[in-house]
Amino acid sequence: CALMHRSVSGIRLHGLVAPSKPLSQTGQRAMNVNLSQRLQKLRKSERGSAAIEFALILPILASLVFGAIDFGRMLWFQEVLVNATREGTRQGILFFSGNGQAEIEAVIAQALTNGGVPSTGLNVQVSGVGTGTGNPLQVTSTIPWSFFVIDSLVPGITANQLTASVTMMNE
Figure: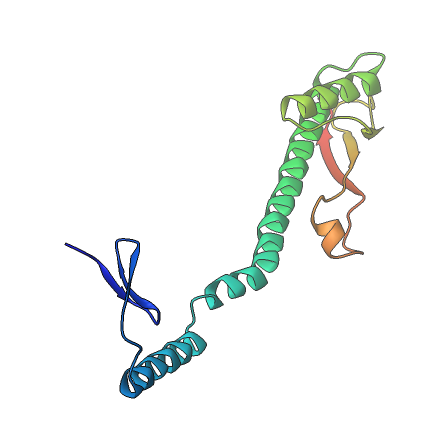
């Protein structure tokens, strides 16, 4: 079965060109009408519009996704810091020794490391160590914090540090 393609120069049979008669006036008009119909379809086509819309929406969508991840990361660090401060406070009220501040800081640093949060820049303030049973022990922990994505997108929304404060009664 031979494939035939009509062209101005002739009929093409499997890559071979055989001479043919020139197109008549009606054939030329039909070819022009067919070409103009194709051009109209091409102008009305929406084939590339989805790609353009996606390219316009992608930066906004990426900012939202990575901003949500960044915010979730901050909440995770805050929760680990609160739990670490709680563990340090519990250590301070139960096992008081001559150096309560150092013990509390060590427990908080270890709990942060166990939770996957770096303890670099950890600042611990303790008040009420060894004041006796029934008196409050307050521990406040602070770690440095900065967003990865949100800081670069929205300047001025930065949180420089995360803080947790826990108060328990000495036992």
